[in-house]
Amino acid sequence: MKISDTQKKWDAIYQKAVDGEHSAVRVLLENQHLLPDAGTALELACGMAANARFLAQRGLSTTAWDISEVVIERLQASPAMKGLAITFEGRDIVQQPPEAASYDVIVVSYFLDRSLIPLIKRALKPSGLIFYQTFTQTYVNEGGPRSRDFRLADNELLQLFGDYQVLAYREEGRVGELQQGYRDEAWIVAQKP
Ligand SMILES: C[S@@+](CC[C@H](N)C(=O)[O-])C[C@H]1O[C@@H](n2cnc3c(N)ncnc32)[C@H](O)[C@@H]1O
Image (cartoon, rainbow, N blue to C red; front, top):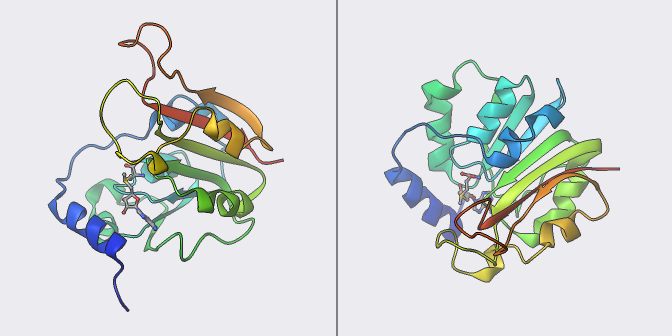
């Protein structure tokens, strides 16, 4: 099968990546009390899968997908993932989005493809939770993608999940003392009706 340019790009990045301690993102760490005790979780575009690891350690039966076969092979061999209930799969989530009503929890960090949002929503079971965190178009510090297409507009996560019950949301833009607080990113935890 032909390898896409996106996969080639990420495979090259993960060939060079060094192993190290990767932490789950803040939207999960700061809102972990909202997670169910059991059920199914999916991390999309997982990269080094720190979020999937966290979800599995919390007792969720976890699936993690990334387009890069290189990172998936590394994860499958990683001692940090040993013994955890995580299924890793190399998968282009735009070409092969998740099946409908399949997951209690879906986590996405530092990945934005707006065409996938309806499919992510469809993939959650009723009462399922989305945890989403990524870069914003309004920022204080450099970092993250340069293209605005891959960054959230002001309040965009709230709009994208406006038909959900919003349980937690954070976005501080450029208000107040800029060297303090939570800048450059937004996060949301929201529940499907
Ligand atoms: C900036 S990294 C973020 C990785 C991880 N979510 C994190 O927070 O560290 C973006 C990830 O999206 C993956 N990716 C890009 N396009 C994808 C696609 N179409 N399907 C699945 N994964 C994709 C890349 O391989 C990469 O691991």
